Image 1: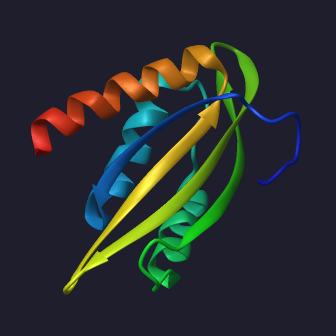
Image 2: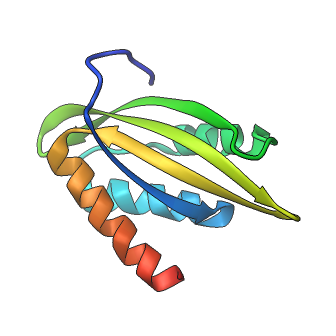
Length: 116
């Protein structure tokens, strides 16, 4: 599930309401990856996010092995929590190869326009 390899230089990030994280991860897997995040990995990501309690707390959620365009690829995910009153948002940062990050970033921009 987790591996440490060469650090990816490209990243995409977006603020999410907690309830939008799971559908986003499923959409990335479905739309861009030949083999993406499995349910156990998604549950683990959500569990780690729910454990984060401090405003501006950052946590590396892991580096996940996926298949992108027929090749094994890593996606590293970092979360940052923002808490206002009773509202909790998470910024997810995705680090990976340039072409995959561009696709994730484009999807994030579309979602950002729809949500905000």
